[in-house]
Length: 210
Image (tube, rainbow, N blue to C red; front, side, top):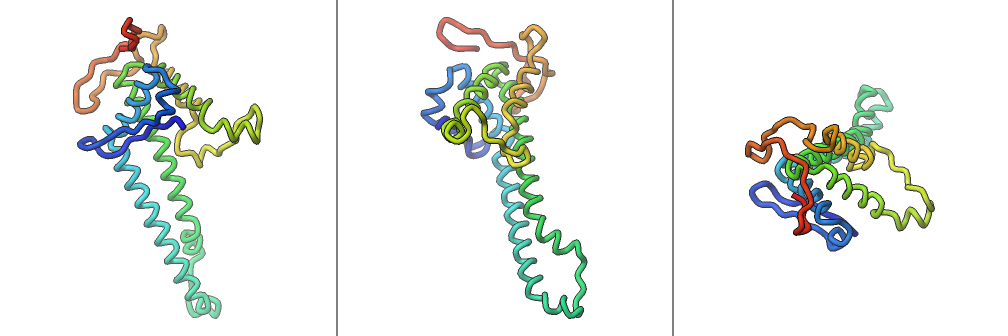
């Protein structure tokens, strides 16, 4: 299974890469994927998503406790001894779902930002776009070809942890200038350093892009 993920914080971190990813991607594409994971670390996305997960779990726990108290007081509510606004049970029922959807939306937003951070680090939007294209074709194809030959299993955009791959590729390629040379992004400050506008990498005899 081709996969890569990051753990830790900018001071103490690691990027894990599966053997399947090395076999699938070229060095240029691998550089884009690694830069994407490094951008996650530099932007402290791991801490942010951990905080969002903790908040989501806290909301779910509060919702369950509230529903238990609600059922415990149901006889008093039925006889009219206690009045309860209609919004209260609705909030208890739907707050975990709303929190989960917000967490997924945050995850999708951080993926777009990590893509931009990777381009700023490598100066090569096409490398990451090509890697995403290969991963989209490879991951999940076994089960999809078994049940839906020639088609992809539909997945609601609200329930995805990552944005649609087509949208990510479109945004990446929009960063290229009209002639595919200079990147169409302004000078920036990234990873604590002043970084000039990057140029598109070139292929060298050593086999590397830089």
